[in-house]
Structure formats: structure tokens, C-alpha cells
Image (tube, rainbow, N blue to C red; front, side):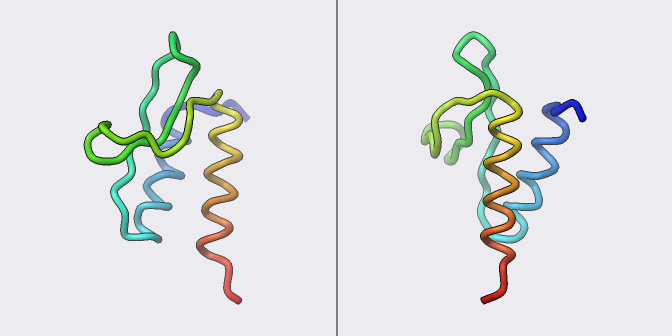
Length: 69
């Protein structure tokens, strides 16, 4: 499966819906890929990473917030 910005955005939308946050996905190939931001890009929540690593990060975050204890 090819990880596209559309796939990552869908994951982030689900994470935002689950947590009630308004995180954004920023992409800059020249700086190393994708990062999560807040406050209209003024705050970087995590460093830049390739699409496949961002996909794994978001999958883990979704699993963590939706896990019932």
C-alpha cells in the first residue's frame, strides 16, 4: 500500500476527532517529509519523518487513544 498525503490526512482527521484536538499535517520534501503541527503551523509537535514512518506513528497514536483499559 502506498502511503499518500490523503491516507495520512484521513488518519490525522480520525485522531483529531478522537482527541478533540486540531493538529495539522505539514509536508516539505526538502526538509525531510511530514510533521505534525498545531496553532496554524507555529508549533511542531514531532519532528519530520518519511510518509511510512508518519503512517506508523499515527497508527500507534490512534491505537493508544482508542484503547480501552
